[in-house]
Length: 469
Image (cartoon, rainbow, N blue to C red; front, side):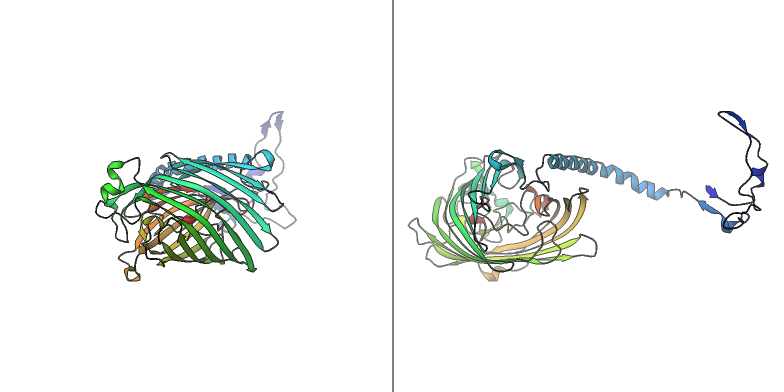
């Protein structure tokens, strides 16, 4: 116990001499004596009312018992936090996403920026890549972007594009690319396909086209997209005992094996009144799209695809905590007489994902889905504007369907999970790491894109346009 008291101090007045470094010295008069006059008046004698006691309360036994397993369980999390903290600081020192850097990456020749990338589950398993950004390409507002990715399962994604600002309102993107998957998954068609019917096939996509859009009112853009695409599906070179034709010999989907070529025209309307892509706490992002596909491979394949996306953001009761809600729907309507090949059916893939399932898990003529995320900041670099790491919990649910009568809770798939989002110095989402859980599997993802506020600039960044409806 520590005590502070003010009293008569007579014992101090009669204290023996003290010995210091230099020898013996006398103790001075008692300045705390009751009869000693201070500027504020006499100090009262010691009493409970003028005595402050400070006690260090002993820790209860139950709290100690709880803290021991807490600290043990927390050891790997603290190690991971320390590793992540030092990694991000090291990347920041290299200027990969600093406020002073114009674009993420290490500055390369000709004013370009080179960024090595590491992704999990974005293509097929662990994926290594490289992306190059060249601002001011051919004009002050122009841009050139190139990317190359290769997975441990020999999947590949290569593409790039250019961006030009045509006046104050118009933007033009040109681009193309190629993507291949050696072990694409197929479980069957429709909302009731079973996990036990897993099979594999080879899938490749090539595309080339343009995207032209214009701002018609503040925060609203109207766009036209036109591109040629070729999708080829055939037997996989790996896991041939689980190839599609071996697992589903009596239920071969339309278009397998085969190749589908054709043109797509898409009209889209996008509205984005959020202030940032990192931690939006108000506003929303909405998009509507209508696409037409016409085959050029001699078949009578022709269809329309309808797309709707609605996102809203809500600030919660604590600083920088927010709730993000998203709903989306897609629907194919046949125009020609030929059935739509399964390689062009609606499926769950970025950005319309069920994050507890692998991509391409379900196939149908339509899909509906709902996503909810609760977000909060967990780490911020001092002295930088909002740069740091946010944590989030999410839940995704949805289903595919061929007929609207199939939409019901029985066919809905439910997933949940959590993750971390890296927010850069420009208040943009730089990367995310997450775990998604379903009754079927656990999916680990590390990627540089997000399900919410997905970037509509597909051709510039070499994204596969057949994945975005």
